[in-house]
Length: 541
Image 1 (cartoon, rainbow, N blue to C red):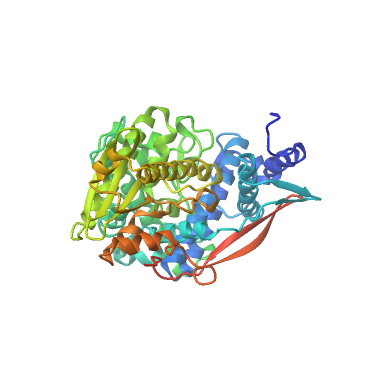
Image 2 (cartoon, rainbow, N blue to C red):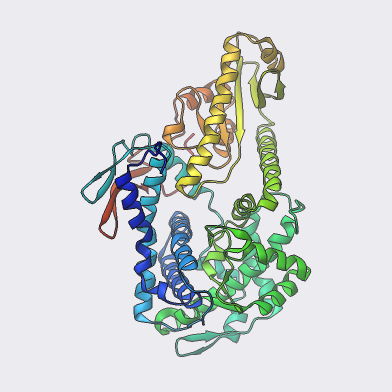
C-alpha cells in the first residue's frame, strides 16, 4: 500500500470485508445462467410494478435511472463469481427470489460505501471510523444545490423514459390476438408487421429524442444509423414482450407473468430476426451484438446499461424488457466506445463534434437577438470556444464549451470534474488577460477596455459538484443558458443572473437533503440523499 494513501489501513481492511460481503449470497452458488436469470427477473418484476404505479414523468425517470444504476454491481458480482453456463429456470422459487432481492438491495447499500471510499481515495473527503460506523469529517451537504441541479436537469432530459402508459398506440390488437396463457406462463406469435408497427408507433418516435448525432457517423464496423436500427428492433421486441405481459397480468394471472418476464432467445434466432427486421447485413448485426453483449470486448467491470444483451449460456441470450426500452441508447453507446481501445479515437472525434454542435445550437437559437458571436484562437491564450457580444450594452460573455456524458458513479464524477475545473481555469486565464488589457484578445473580440467581460463554462449535461466551483466563473447547462437568453435582450442582466447563481435550485422548494445510513454486514456508512421536490420542468429564469 502506498504511503500516500489518504485512507487509513484500518479503513482499507474494512473495505475488503465490505467488497467481499456479496459472496455469502446463495445465488453465487448457482451457475451464471440461473443466477443471472433470477436477478434479472426480480429487477424486471420490480420495475414492472413500480412503473405501473408511477404517475409522473419525473417519478418514472427516477425509477428508471435508479434501477439501471443499481443493477450494475449485483450483475457484476454474479458475472465474476458464478460458474459459466447452466440452464434457465423459467420458474418462481421463493428462496432464490429472496436471494435476488437481498443481492439487489445489497447493491443499493454498497453504492454509498463505494462513493465514500472513492471520494476519500481522491482527497475529496476525509473518512473516519467510529466503532462500526464510517463517516466523513467533512460537511457532505454544503453546496448540495449543484448536485441537485444536475439531478433535476437529468430528470428533465429523460424524456425518453417509457412506461406501459406509452404503449397505447402499440400493436395491441395483434398482440392480444396471438396471446396464449397457460398457468403463469404466456406466449404470443411475433410477425414482421407487429415489430414494424411497434417500431414506428412507439420506439422510433422515442428514440428520435434520444439520438442527436448524425446517423452517418462511422465507427470501426458500423455507423450510428446501423446501431440505431439494431437497437430499435430489440427495443421493439422488448416492448412487445412487455405489452404481452401486461395483458396476461390484467387477466389476474399469478405473479404477473414472472416466469416469462425476461425474454430469452437462442442467439441464432435473435440474429435472424434482427437481420430480417433491421434490413442490415448479418455481419453488421453481429458486430453490434458483439459490442452490446455483457462482458464482451474485455470490459473489466461490465455494466448492463452499456451492454444490455446478456449471454446466459452458450445458446441463450436474455433481453430484460425495461432495460432496453428505457435505455438512453446513444448516450450509453458513447460511454461504451470510450471504454473500447479500438474506438477511443472515434470517441474523441465525437466529443469535438459534439462541442461544435453545441456552438451551432447556441448561435442558431439566438440568431434573432442583437448579439454578435465570435470564436477562434488567440495567441498564448485559450481558444475562444464562443463569445456572445452585445455592442449596445458593451458586454461580452465568454463561453467555454464542454461536452461529456453525465457521470453515473463516483469515479466518473471525479474524472468529469477535472474537465469542469479545466474549463473554469481557461475562462480565468482569459479574464485575467482582459484585465491586463491584452490587445490580441481585444482585437479578436472586437471590443475595448470599456466593455464588461464575464465568462461561463457551458456544459451539455453536467455542471459538477460544489467542490469544483469557482466564485468568479459560473457553470451552467447549455439549454438552460439558451432558455435564459431567449427571454431577454439584455446580456448584462444575464451575466448578473449567472454571477448570483440564480439558476440553481433552492433547498426546501426544489429539493430536500436527508441524512442516511447504509449497512453492509456489520459496517455502516453515514451518507446523504437528495429528494427532488420539483414536479414540473426545472428551468428557473
